[in-house]
Amino acid sequence: MPTGAGVADGPFHSQSTEAWFTHVPGLKVVYPAFPAEAKALLMSSFNEPNPILFFEHKAMYRTVREEVEEGAQFIELGKADVVRSGTDVTVVTYGMGVHWTLDLIDDEDLAGQLELINLRTLVPLDFNAIRSSAERTGKVIVLQEDVAVGGYAEHIASRIAQECWEALDGPVITVSSDATPVPFHAALEEGFLAKSKLNDAVQKLLSY
Image (cartoon, rainbow, N blue to C red; front, side, top):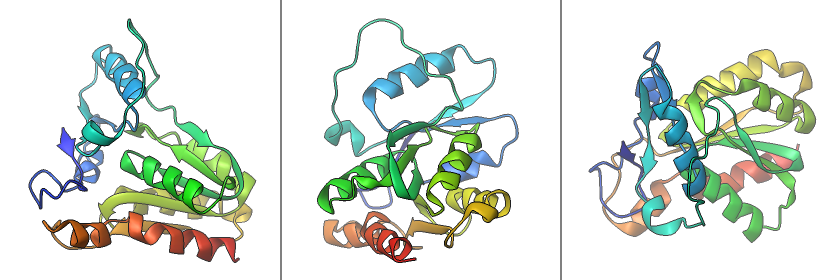
């Protein structure tokens, strides 16, 4: 399913609707962040007996490139990936949020401070990976492109607060896009997206 903003398309196929489908028992939700893992997750999805909704962010079609090996590759559904290791703050995200976080790490020289978890699948959710990272860093941000109300980040943050609270050294922060239709104008769209709010959230948690 095409999804996501960042290409000045306005509200047409730019909304983030993934959370809607996580409410359907029995439906798996896949949301890759890189071409190679998209191929491997898609091939794993073909082997699944259960129905799967496979999200593809529109902006990634034209901005994210990497070599993809020929032949069959598979990634187990429900296994997150630690893209960058860090000691101070965990950022849990998926899809374009992975690239926003990588950009922030490079732009703000945060290598070694931020641990970046790429969920890959929302259902099943690899909460063990989230818990393990939260216990190491003690501080967690859950980043999504979706709006806050009803978004999947709120569900993840709630679980972290309930199941990892003894290990936390600060509040669990969710970073989401504005609760408005996706703007057509590129500058307005940039301000609408959660990316514009990520650095403030990181600096807030680093200060705890």
